[in-house]
Image (cartoon, rainbow, N blue to C red; front, side, top):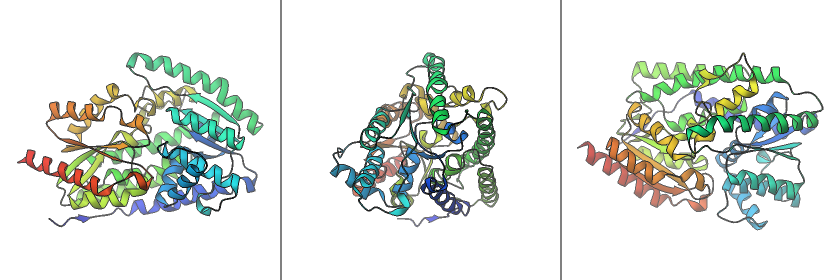
Length: 416
């Protein structure tokens, strides 16, 4: 087998400090007299606008998984009655709640303060169970915003109005009551201004993934989403992407590839395996395989140029979730197939990897249909691999490696 060299980015080394600073400020928020919100779904900008310290469900799960702390929390949750095949992100939080309730010692760097308000921005059924479970077991206050995925384009405008009304009539009054002050619409506008600049710079970085060979990978981008969330509304988010863009431009000029040689370029569908990025990277590097694009984490504000920073900030934010290609549409195969087919052409993709999460079935909708349709239209192969984002017990890396080897062989055969 050929030898491959992985050239790591220098800029992504800055992410560790950004992430650690965010979670440390959250852990100590109550000591400093600050209000805390826990949030699932795409509505976390609203507690940030009220200067609350904000936890983001998927962000915490990625953090705990990346720090190697997930397995203990999952097992605590199961001992407390959670099912083994329940959503692992849900179980991480149930495990944390059980540890707090029963005084079970866990790693200090993943301990969370109980929220003053838990916001369920429901994109999937599990987010409702998560909110209900924490309310029932810990007595925390919950407010919900239902964010239904559209099945067809004609539903989008209707759902936008539905979500916007919930934010105005339910979420904002709850935030005002908890914080004891009127909602800060000006601060929300400031957040959108910074978000727009940050995400537009990030999109300029995405363009370098189209180069062949590519100077960075989907894994690098996955790591680099932290400033979008953890620095929401903070000008500190902008310098990171400026530095990243400069490094990518330098690599492109010098023709430095993320992986040398770049043998095949692949599309990745589904969650990123946060606790196992290193293992997946090593398997794919051995095959000369570079992951470049995928629905996740491309979903986060993919069209920031459409953010209206002059008008109503609530309506502008909701449009980012629906009309402008955001999170609400991700789980609907009929709306995503044309997008993926365009990416296959734009990013010069050689093969498809569908990561079928054993504990998040909604993300798996359409995987086999995607492979069949794109193989017919574009003539490239694909495989489905099963596993989980953070639960070690649900990943068989021998089987995963075998399937990726099979994909590499199919790609090579078709090229020949």
